[in-house]
Length: 261
Image (cartoon, rainbow, N blue to C red; front, side, top):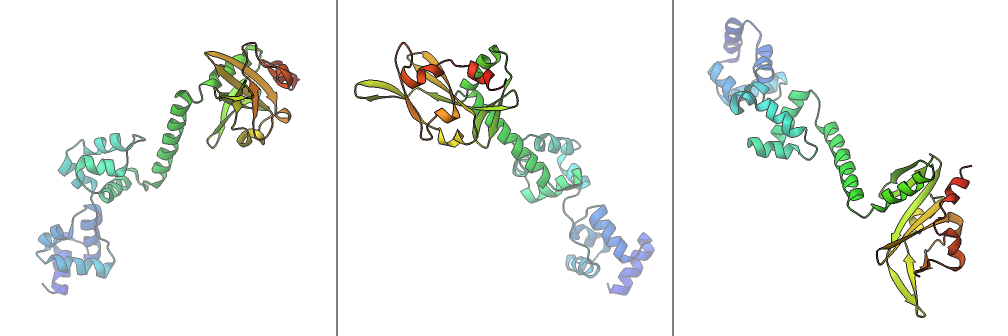
């Protein structure tokens, strides 16, 4: 069928010009070139040429076709999967049996916006969940014990993080780094707790709270930043506690309160 005859046929049969017809079929009804070709009784190549002439892009999957093929609850299933922070477009595609690109197109048709922003929010949720899991996994459990001790003297400690480093913000003013150590070294037949991980917290903290664990017994030291060496230190691991320069810092929770008065 020649172009003028085809345009006249469309105008007569569908009461609209060719350009509006092709947009209606491709973008509103979501038909593919093959289906449009069957309606007009022309070749698929001819439909491609018409779309190119009028600047009409090839349609993706429409919501109508999506529900028609995958069932009336397909959109609800799609939403249920994609709202899960651990799910991706690829997961949706695997569920329905189509590509990630098709899932991306359907997402945009359902929500009216690209998936990019939703994915950014999911990444943040997953990171927060991972950080929370780490906190509860044991590596940072000492923070809870320390916060209880600080709360017992009437202060308000909050657990904060900067990147992967955690610290306590006390009364929204003092910062305290918490270090747990159970590593014991021997120097000249004497046993010491080895205290590392100081340099990472040295610049941003007012105090260091050391939790020294030995044979099930835990001893705390509350040491001002100025008294903590940058490269760490060693504290005697004695049954009766520390001696020498660190004795005054053993269970010295009052130092926190005095710095807030």
